[in-house]
Image 1 (tube, rainbow, N blue to C red):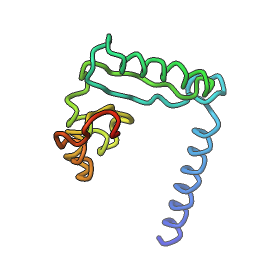
Image 2 (cartoon, helix red, strand yellow):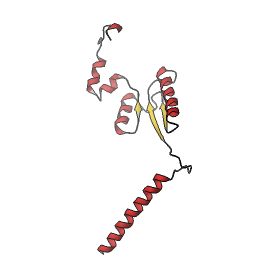
Image 3 (cartoon, rainbow, N blue to C red):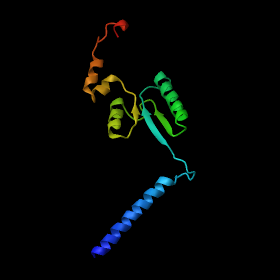
Length: 127
């Protein structure tokens, strides 16, 4: 009985090793190349806003500079939720990047509350 358990353990171990090697060396596309990674970014601005244009440019440059290995999928207009909800998604690991204002961020990082104070800066020269 003890020898049967050791053979079973050895078989499971060898199976895991072989499966790991198969997944490491064979691409699901069959081309032998790696698929890359797609990052999700969310913002609450409309598609006509400069933030969206900047993120689209960032997506284009990221794809160019990484040789297509990294892609950025932009979700505008709060498609993935409010700023607070996207911050929660960042914490959970279901969202990669989020553009947020200082008010919702201060709910998660208390030191950021300083930027929500009124009249923090007298004028542009005091920045």
